[in-house]
Each structure stands twice: as C-alpha cells, then as structure tokens.
Image (cartoon, rainbow, N blue to C red):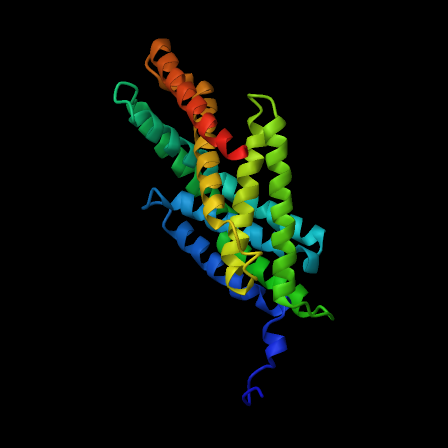
Length: 273
C-alpha cells in the first residue's frame, strides 16, 4: 500500500508524468551552458549535446504529443544548436590543423573567436531561458491533460525498437551509398546518437534484451563523428581559403584534411560490414 500523501505507483510510472524528470536536467544544463558561453570554449559543444538530447527526448514522447507539436519544438532546438554549429566547426578545424605545426594558421584563431562571438550573440537573441521554459511548460500541459495514461516502460521499449530499426536501415543505405555520399554516412551517426541517448535515458527500466549494444554504439558514434569532423572541416576551409596567407598554404591544408578524411572513412566503413 502507498504511504499517505503519495501518489499511487501507477501514476508515478506513467510516461505523461515522467517527461519532466528527464527534461528538466537537460534544460537546466543548456541554460547553464548559455550563461557561460563567453568564458568556456568547450561550452558550445556541451550546449549542442544538451539540445540534441532534448530533441531525442521529444522524439521519444512523440506518440503521446503528436507530430506537429513535437516537430515544431524540435525545429526550434535544432535552430538553436545550429547557431553554435559554425563556431564548433571552426574549433574542430583548428584542432585538426594544429596537429601539423606547418599548417597551423594564426588567422584561424581570429576567425574562430569571431564565430564564437556571433554564436553567443545569436543564442542571446534567441532568449533560450524563456523559450526552453515555455517549451517545457507547453509539453507538460499537453501531457498532463491527456485522458489516457501510458506506462513509461512500454513507451521506452517501443521507441528504442523503432530507433534500432531506423539505425539498421541507415546502415544498409550507407553500405550501398556512393563513395562521396557523406550524407548517408551522416545519417548513420545521427541514428546511432539517437539510439544511444534513448538507452542512456531508459537503460535502467528496459529489459536486458532491449538494453544492449551500448559499447558498439559508442564506437559507431565515435568513428562516424570523427569522419564528420574531417568532412565538415574540409568543406569549411574550402569555402574560406581567404584565411590563408596564400594559395599554396590553403592547398596544403586542404590536402591534409582530404588525407585525414579518407583515413577516417576507412575506419568508419569497417563498422558497416
């Protein structure tokens, strides 16, 4: 029997009442990262991760919230994450080129600083503090007024299975994609990330057979993430050759990135077999 003053166990374990328990820590983290954007270089990355995890959480609750509401909120979170994206891309490009001292370029640091400042201003203008809290309030209101209750375990198992099937399909497409079709490879990375986040959210309540493959997912996400970093850096610098002192330096940097991209592609391809 439940103790006086507590809700019945069934009420505490339904998915409608549990959304906030997962979402609030992510909202709190995202707002903390925004507040520190001007002091911590790695904060942009951490902010993007928090926003991506929120997007995955909304995707998980989509059957209970409806596609229109979820996609509107997910689109907002994606725009916010994208605001930090270019600055993060410059951070990665600087890191890759710094591995070869001959290719390091002081102008990269200046451009990276400008990109980070632009990201900070854009995110400040987006007023994430109020936008995220409004989002949380709207979603909770929709869930709490739902006449039906869905067990959290049931929702978790269903969404993990959907995500697992989606990842398998993306991997099949990547295997048959053309050599330079990195869009298909990027979809594998996103699919692995979604499934990993879901397992991190729900691992403690899932049966063992549904809560498998975390080690493989981390390896998949790491290798495909490293490939995406090389592809993004090559694309970014190819469109900003003006940051280099001359054409020869630009060609040398791009050549180094191409070699790195090919090597990382080979390593990622092994996980598709």
